[in-house]
Length: 83
View: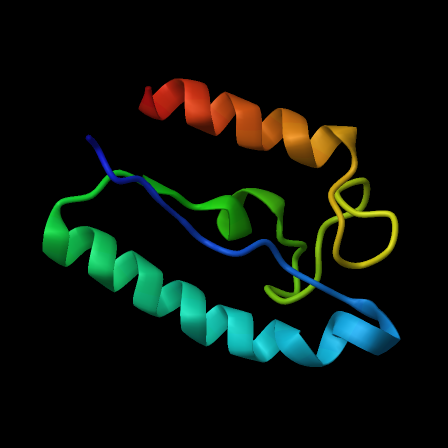
């Protein structure tokens, strides 16, 4: 079994926006773990974050937490790349 680590996608909005800085910290730790353990990594955050480094880029989320079809397309591409 190959374990693949995936970073958390960016969030925004009144309910989930406060999580954004914490996700940056968590994702840095996920990257460190993947590198230390030699696990494949899907850096979903890097692929879907906007220019501010915290919030999703336009078209990735309609409500600040759930991905749109575009977000899932990106995730699917990354899963296919790893497999």
